[in-house]
Amino acid sequence: MERGPLGILACAGSLPTEIAEAAVSAGRKVHIVGIEGFAEPEIAAYSHKVVNIGQVGGMLSSLRQAGCGQLIIAGALRRPNLLKIRVDHGFFRAIRTALSLTRGGDDSVLRRVVRFFEREGFEVVGVDQVAPHLLAAAGALGRLEPSPASTRAVTRAAALLRSLGAFDVGQGAVASEERIIAVEGVRGTDEMLAQIQAAQAEGSGAPMQSAGAVLVKMPKPGQEMRVDLPAIGPRTIERAHACGLVGIVVAAGRALVIERARTIKLADDLGLFVVGIGGVVETDDRAPVCVPKTAEVFRPLGSVRAPASERQDAALGARALAVLEAHRAGRAVVVVGEHVQGVDGALGIRRMLGGRRTSHWGLRAFKRRIGVLVVSAIGDVGYDAENIDAVLALVARAGLAGIAIASPVSSQAPLAGLLTRAADRQRLFVIVPDTPNGGGIA
Image (tube, rainbow, N blue to C red):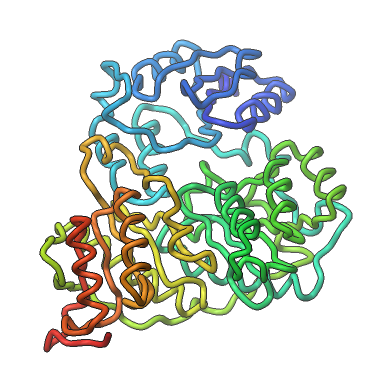
């Protein structure tokens, strides 16, 4: 049956052109619609059109004029500001989908995008249907294999990622046999590895315990498998080596190896193993860890009140922290728009907040603070005025609206006074669980 050209909606990276090459090699025509500012120049080797991300009508008309019935969405896409994009008439057909992108995690966002194109009459397909050779096979992909200690590190990381699946946090974690070192957030794997490397360069302690550590990448439970599969490539190998990691493990048949030959050769040359789970390494398939019930209702400590959306984010963050604490994987998270954007892991709150503002579709255009830093206990913010002030300054600089403490806090506790006075100066809210008597611990 004649299927017509394969449509490729191309975002950043080499994956779109690798898919195009595979389709052409199989005797099929392709037409690429590249997203301006993301798609690589190499798409020019194929029938293509470049459009702004807001020009939805241009995307649809280009694909239809080329006769595309099937569509694959490929490559990395950072969340743009929806109020600063160029739109056309087709954007307003997608306005309900566009507005829904302001809340939820990456997987829920991508599901809405897929549903939109399906409503427009396209069959959205996955890489496995077009370029199955890009999927990781089971077992060792290069010459090297993991040690027993590395296998135990993989089990630790994989168990955490499965438990965090409901929170749509990320697709990767770095772990050693003894501990979770880092969890991928909204900024992706490269940024997570860069943060580990920076912490090591500063000699900040915990990350230096990463001897024998591994990177594990696997899809979230229930993830939309046609888009945004976990992926590794040459840059991942270089970053992992720079961090002193000993290897990388991905989910066999459910993760991509981009620029495969180059990636595997580089790993072999640098002494890293690359393994697809399902062969050499097996994960622990025990049931997800049980976590305690967390507070859903919060009360304010300072003079700034938390909007309902931020209280909802705080409740989500408290539930995520319960999972992280059960795995000894972190004591702080950043939640924005019902999306867990960051986890501190062993890197600490300050590095998680970094020097960059949080990112979410369109919300920053209103130039107001949104989202919340959720910490396990008040002492995680700091035990003296200097450290508390430093953390709150980072919270404000990150564009967050306030802080939530997941465990009970007495408003009479000395640390509560230090925290609320500092928060009032930064115009940040502080909220704590609403216990029956309004009491708590320091």
